[in-house]
Length: 177
Image (cartoon, rainbow, N blue to C red; front, side):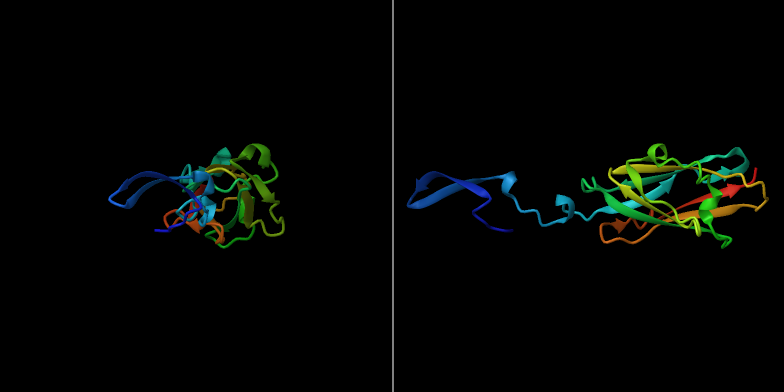
């Protein structure tokens, strides 16, 4: 318990047998904020998906859902995602229609902080500003039979948040048809 006279207003109530009886009431405007986000718990972030399997030839929509345990700071939190494919192929984001990706409509609760590097297409960097956010991606029908592929989106470490141990990675399986 921290005792300080500055954040409290003290009102004497009575003198009893020579002892002063006091009550105090908190003054919320003066309380010190010594925790992240003004909350007691550290900010935690998780990512989940809306579906497990996407059909490439149908150009199915994949939705990545982000959830903070509490409201992020007003200026948002930078979140980097590493994207990989289980077959080890390069440019895993090429499995989605990146050319048709519109950050204004395909990202809710945040924005695209950096354009994906077209030479590798293996990451997304977002600025998330709301407790719940989402990113929509449409599968890219490349007309090649690649067989089923698992595409994973993993939250990268960041000092601004802890990763939810049960939701650090979201994975979709993409099948041809």
